Each structure stands twice: as structure tokens, then as C-alpha cells.
Length: 478
Image (tube, rainbow, N blue to C red; front, side, top):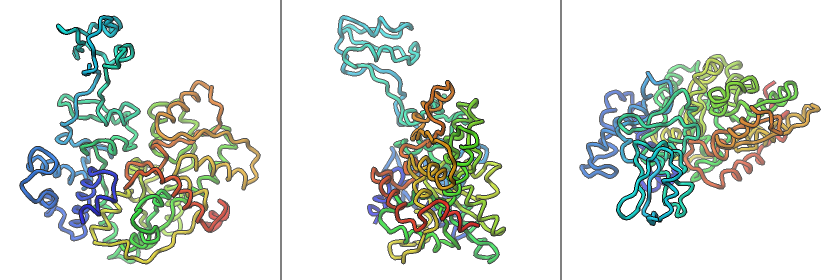
């Protein structure tokens, strides 16, 4: 049974995280979380033989911290990404080091190029780097004829393309909240799960329980279109039914909000002449923190999540809206002044799986529900390039005479290059579609799986849409 559950995730780290979320959710449903929280580490590691660390006591100590984060984490830390210090102790320090490939050559190019005098040689002419003098410039690695000098970075540092991660005095990872955009790349790449995202799964469960006790409140689940590439062991319709089994009254596509965005953003682009997209909260945050001069170019249109949620609450003042998607940055977006009135909480697909299993809901045994209220163009927002295609369609359908010249960027490095070109006015484009995750939302840190076929599955899901145009999809809201 455990192996069957593991196959739903990419890694064992994700599976461990899921097990903690599942047990926290079970206790929250039962109403005795405060009493049961202390026992959860023993439930996950019941024996005395360690399975992950040097001893079972350390495993349980780390699990205790995971439980705290699953219950909402450090309230004094505004970031949704946190480091579990006690779990961050197995990675090498990193930096440039001389490997066994060093042949002790006579040229000593590495020594010649080092301006800090950080390189010395032993009796066998093998090079050594004095870490107290090295400034990590990398020049020695570039000139070594044997490629014997390698930069050993920690996985989290490699994953973080905005350099928001450094090491503290205890050699644990430290996140600079002034730089961090909450994209979750470090969360997915940390092989020890020492960096993770806070969960608001307990808040969602309490909201569901309140709605069950008060028929006035209705629970709406807004699901991201990237859900089509997740839960590969079941049918999408069964996932929709499973969400309703959790206590949700209605399941709505965020893709319908994407149709609304495409229609509004295409108009805004034609009026202003140049825009950067506003759908990805991590991308928008990156612009504000790293390219503040470009903030005036950010689209004023809300994200698909916020657009459809605003509509829901405008038609049902007692609605409670929960977003479910692949994104850790959405957990930050729902706290923004411009969004918090429309969305009550955000969950990831990992957390949705934990919710299903916390109530022993086998979605493969459920009948198929229907999710058919968005167009092809709204649904393909889930992958890179989808937004640009939708904006082009929006211009066409509204008969707006504007020549679209988009550039679609997936991953912060690609976004950085486009923004740099715009900052220097050398970009041959009038619309930058920016997505912080590789591949777009289908590569989000909160996905169950990051498979290569995800893009094709999103396109296939888009082609199944009953509404063939953006206008047709949006017309049902009027």
C-alpha cells in the first residue's frame, strides 16, 4: 500500500511531506489536532530503527518541525517558504574545490589567474584552495585544462536563480525574504526536504467544517488547469467528484478566470502598447524586487485565480473560495490586499492528495464529475506560451487592431533575460509572458509529479473544452 502511494509522487521527500500533511489533516477533521500533533512523528516513524537519519530520535525531532509547518508554520515569518534548520545539515558547504582530476601539472594556470592568492600546491603539485581567501570568482575553474576544479553548490542554491539563499552561522540554509519570490524551486529540489512551504490545510478543514454546520456558507473550489496533468492514477472527473466529497459545493475552473484575463489583458495591451503578464505571482514579485523600474509595465489585470474568485464572491456574498493548484507563490498572493477579499486560502495538489487520503476517499472508485466551463485558450494557461496564444485570440475575437509580438519565458533565468532587454530597450517584443517555473504552471513546486508529458496533457485537456472561443466562455458570466 505504501509503495502504491509513493508512485503518486516524484520523490520520497514529497511522499514524506504528504504523510505529515495527511496525519495533520486526519487530526484536524477529528477536532483533536492540538492533542494529537505531538504523536504524529511516532505514527510516521513507529519503530526504533531509523529509516532516514542517524537515529530515530532525530527523525522524530525533524518530523515535529514538519508538523508545525503543516499547521501553518512560523507566524512571525511572512514568507510561506521556511527552512527546517535541524534537517539542513547533510549538504556539503559548497564552493569551488579541487577534485581528484587534478594532475599536478606544471602550468599552474589556476594559481596565475587567482588574484587573491587562494591557491597553493602540495608536495605532489596538486592544487588546494584556501577557503578563507577564495571569493568564488570561478576563474580557476575556467582555466584548468583538466576541468579539475568544480563548483559544489548546494541544491537549494542551484535551484534559486535569484540568489535568495545563503548559509547562516550554523551552515544551514537561510532565505532572504527581500529577494525570495516564493516560487518553491528550492522546496522541490532540496533532497532532504529541509526547505518546505507552509500549509494552510488546517484552516481549509476548519472552513469546510463551519460550512457544514452553517448551510448559508457554500464552499467553492477553484482548480488550476494544470490539474489535468496531475492525479494520473485516476480520471479528472473522479478528482472533481472527490473534491465535492470533501465538502465543496461547487468546483470551478480557474481557466474560466484565465479566459477573463485574456479578454481584459488583450485590451489593456492594445491601450498601453507594452505589458508584462500578471498571472504568475512569483514573476510579478520578481519584477517588483529585482526590476522595480519595470513595475509600471506590469498588467493591472488580476490573475485568473483572483478574477474568477472575485466573480464568485460578487454573485454569492457568503461564498468561501479555496484555490487548488501547483503553486507555492499563490499562498503569498492570497495574502495581498488586492486579492485577500476574494480567495480564502490556497492549497497545492500535494495537499489535495493528503486531504483525500485523510478522509479515506478513494477517488478511483468515484463516478466522474464534469468540469466544462472554460475555453481551450483558458485551459492552456497552464503551460508556457498558453497566455500569449490566449492574448492573440483575445485581440482577434474583439477585433482589436494591434500587432502582438510576444516573448514567452518559463523559468526565472529566461524571465531575467527578457526583463534585462526591456530595461535596456533592446527587446523586440511588446508583451512578456513570464512564468517562474520551468514549463509554466505544470512545473510548479506543489505538483504531485513533473512529467515531460504534462504539456501534451494540458493541450489535450484544452481541446476537450465545450466552449470554443474566449467570448463564448466569458458570456456565461454575464
